[in-house]
Image 1 (spheres, rainbow, N blue to C red):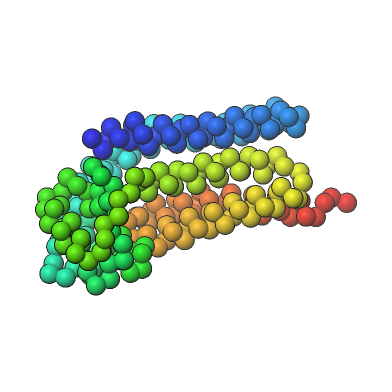
Image 2 (spheres, rainbow, N blue to C red):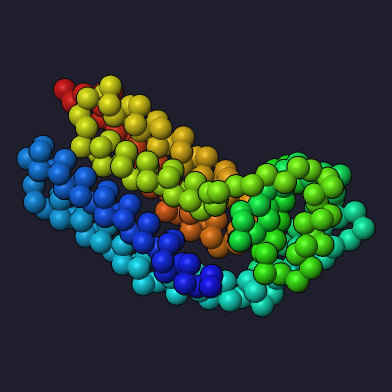
Length: 231
């Protein structure tokens, strides 16, 4: 079920956002009478990115989810929950430190400790799920969420991929500076979130750093060019 969810929901939405960003870049490039070379170069980069999203990412996510189910262990103690999982450090949340309890009906339960980045996700398909739900229900009100975390992150990614080509083609400092600062702040927030997230592997965090830092440098260069016009 989770594997089919990757193919039917996660990947198509990501591909749609990337395609929209490419179309926007081409449209803005043509309106600025840019050279065909610059448009093609960006198109090739985004096409390669889209190919990764369509072919490599789904296969990788299916492998990760299979490993997730094989190695996921949740220990229910007298006053704590302890999650063990391959490639990740053990995560323990004492009942006294539970801050929020959220559920996405039909999917999972999310229990946030102190700090809130300490999150244990409990799939509904796991054994003794009702026991976990009953235990945490007495500690905190269970909030029902309709949007999953990845859907919220997808909105931020979509905003970023729309703002980026606009920032690249913009020439006015009144447009370049706000958009660049917004993108830098968004990337900084994503990297800090990833660093604090105990449910992400070290390799994933490193890949995010390598991917987003160059974009931050491009934004910084655009600010310099916009604020210091050529003599």
